[in-house]
Length: 218
Ligand code: ADP
Ligand code: AMP
Image 1 (cartoon, rainbow, N blue to C red):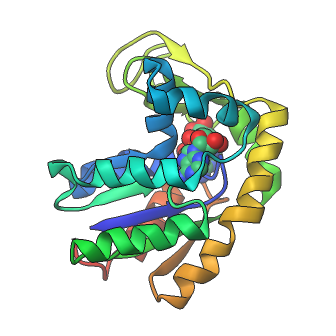
Image 2 (image 1 turned 90 degrees about the vertical axis):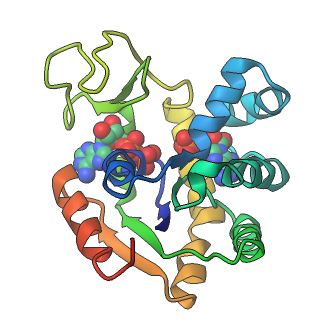
């Protein structure tokens, strides 16, 4: 199963990827997570991306396509993958098509999360993640089952993202509307787009995605 999760920051892509990767046994490729790891590791890509990410702007297509090319070539992607946060521009979408075509592959589905911009700020403001395993939570909508303890790995340390502040969120939303939203029409024209109501509860969105993927081979 080769999937793309498409939607603005805070739409719920990472949240849904957490169960999709278990359900289909395929890796969750979040370019945001990859870049945050590169920044933490102090690699060349991390050095180039850090300030751009802090401002809430997009890292260059050349860097991102290179990152994805390298990641898709790893063995765990042979049976499929869940892309989250990539592609984000038409140039990235075209490069992804070309990369997959080289391998004789194509996308099975692009899940679009339809969300009103008003809810995104509240979702991002309440977001936090496990410092150890990265599992995502929300102060109101998805608290750990045991207060202060990660459901997945038991860690008691949590982190918030440096770019989850009002100024950067505003820029990220603007970047989405200007540069990423055109991908909806791009994938609709290719017949792979499936839209779910991202305003519903976390479990309702999961059910809608499961229904949307019923007729897609796994
Ligand atoms: P994205 O990966 O698209 O940026 P996340 O999956 O990190 O978004 O979700 C943003 C925040 O909103 C997280 O704190 C998450 O727990 C919460 N969240 C995700 N989906 C929903 C939903 N359907 N309803 C309410 N809160 C949600
Ligand atoms: P995310 O975790 O998906 O919200 O991404 C966090 C930040 O990483 C974005 O605001 C961008 O600065 C950068 N980023 C992640 N993926 C991409 C991409 N495909 N293209 C450009 N920039 C990206």
